[in-house]
Length: 190
View 1 (cartoon, one colour):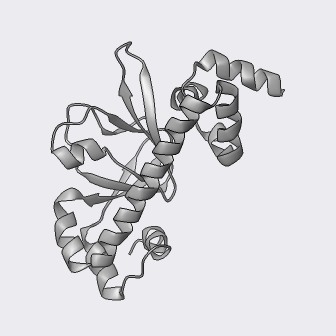
View 2: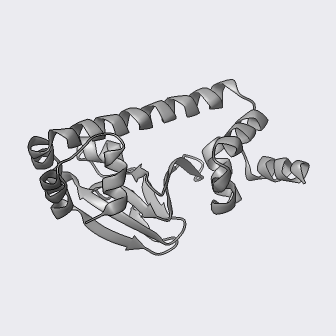
């Protein structure tokens, strides 16, 4: 059984022991070393990944050949390339471990069966997608409506642990400014 995943699901929907068993039978545990790739551009995404332990990032390489981070995944968060999953096309993004990580893969090929057999699971994933969409919408709003300094302070007040776990250049990429700006902000704080 996968207690972290089942506890997370239980926060949103209630599964019977039989339904939990059906789900757990389809889960594939994975471990990643620091800097190891879970997904690379040009390859197909195989499913949704639940982060049990560690920290991951989803990013793409922009036209200036810079990494642009779209999403982080830490404990009890899901990470995937939804575009690749939904379209069946190869990914444009990379998913990489920032720290040694333990993940649980729910293969896309098993989702239709599970959603038919365990309708509450489909409700759970709808809620997760909605939460991810709201987070993305807020982030875009922050990028367009806040100064770089406001974005930085807002982020560290909501996610203080990230500042310690994520390299400075990755945090800057995610927040939409340069690593040099982030260095100045941190120096100001000292």
